[in-house]
Image 1 (cartoon, rainbow, N blue to C red):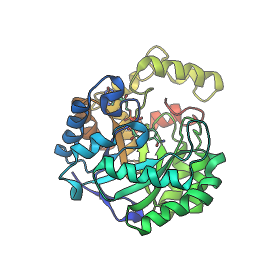
Image 2: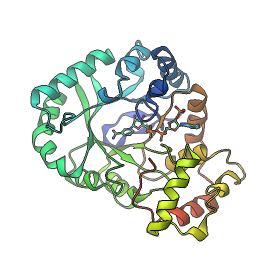
Image 3: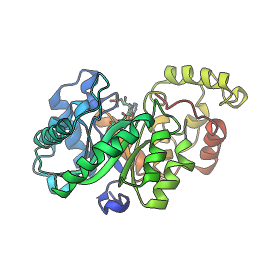
Image 4: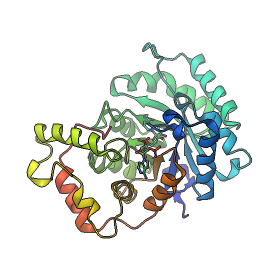
Length: 313
Ligand SMILES: NC(=O)c1ccc[n+]([C@@H]2O[C@H](COP(=O)([O-])OP(=O)(O)OC[C@H]3O[C@@H](n4cnc5c(N)ncnc54)[C@H](OP(=O)(O)O)[C@@H]3O)[C@@H](O)[C@H]2O)c1
């Protein structure tokens, strides 16, 4: 698989990355065991994926650490720290340092390539920049972290309030952003800033729930028609993506979703989250495929281009 540069980090990464969180957590959230989850990570290596995103919150760092053992030099690992407790208290300096040390142990490594603050929302950004960022910079100077990143909470902020301000402040080398053909709001904000400042991006939510489950999609579309973000005359509500699946050369909605994201200017790595080796194979193939036919991309942009209120969750 080809490699692309992850913005100004200079890291060379596969355009397809394995997301070890989301609704799948390598299958562990759907009842899969750790052995099966490890097999998914190893299958990603076989497919020449070299980018792996995990986090303490996902409970998959140990699995990733075991599956990547012996391949450390060949891979780029992204992990994170929470910035608040479940009760809403900000993490202290000690908490953050402990979180980093524990991630290093679980991942069986002495450095993490991309280390991000996890799921920051707009009203917490200033606190994180003032209090947590300097700690991460210290850890970077010690070599425990190679590059600093930040991830957004796309469901809470489908117009990227926090991420836009974080990129304008320009203190992170990598940003994780939500984007899919249902909500393309990052195009004129996050991706523009990322391109201007050469910030690497990890894309999440390419498929998520709405584009993997027809019932979820239908429910979301009913709401979007009500808000006026989607014109009922543009779709067949009983089978809203019939124009995608009937397109010659496109086999499935998920394939179209990953292909749509991969070719968006400003996108470095498209994460795919799955517990299925078969899905992983299909998704990597889709991410590495040609752009969607122009007429299909234009139709998607016409139908969904005004959507700003949902993340596809
Ligand atoms: N704020 C944050 O930091 C944050 C938030 C969300 C996500 N993330 C990261 O982003 C990654 C990707 O996000 P995501 O979980 O939303 O992943 P996604 O790739 O957008 O969606 C994955 C969902 O679609 C299903 N799926 C995948 N391929 C399929 C296929 N070929 N056919 C049918 N269903 C398919 C998966 O279920 P199966 O297991 O059945 O395939 C899973 O439930 C996460 O793993 C995580 O690393 C970060």
